[in-house]
Image (tube, rainbow, N blue to C red):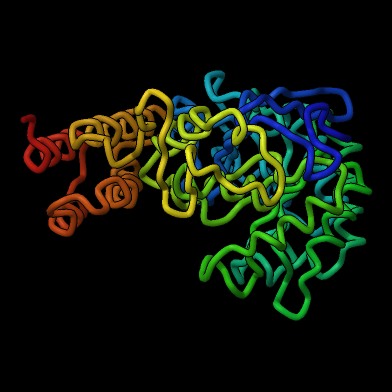
Length: 382
């Protein structure tokens, strides 16, 4: 299934923030822009997705969910399948290495047998997770050892869901087997609507720099859209991904942790590009008058610069922390929520004066009121 807004080759001009329509077996979804939230276990839960959507993320992705756990009616898994009307379009990501299990899980989802009311727009199959407990079972990036199995999984998904089906892969299972192109072609042959590529191999995990030429090679080989993932931390790095790979959208992962504003920053940056830069192709350089992505320098005719996360005030950070806490409290008990929020607070205050002290004190917080009082003390109104 091809995206009606996708490009057949990386040289076709395209505004980086234009809508993208993905078409599935019986349903299509139009994504309002091309800056997406990547799926992240333990991070991209419903409250966080809502915040990222509010800040402009074109597509938000749910946490990785085991297809086999769905077939076992696992209660913890059912909780991961919550969605909200205000977060669409949203992607459901499943992982498995068994086509028949994937088919069964999707049938259960379609019938409402599991997580009644689950409403999503895109089905994504995880083929890139590098964590040993996932790959050890033959799931995640271990699937890249067998492109034929990738095609079988995608075919099973396409046959059992009306939604567009996408896959997320890495450059290869290891450095000796960098077969992202073969795996992406297998996904396309199985009927995938798009392929997301993280520009690292499995052993690299999240270290080193993403290999943009590796992502570009996948884009050049496919006729369906390709999403680029890796090292996108701001507007200039998003532009670099678009220009050097020809990708059709970018996925923001770890840089969104404690930083939902990143989507606002990237989108504003891309929308302010001079006309010649906002519809580029692979290898397009930045004009001297417009943007030097490698230096993060921007200028426009009116002399204004785009919003950057560095402009977020302590009070705005405090408000966002408490908003996320309040959203979490809608879906879980306070004790559990406060434990979960500890890592999020640490991300939100990274680089903030006294961050180490605040992190230490947050570890002792057990209620929302205590958290609010702590933040009021550490981040007073000026």
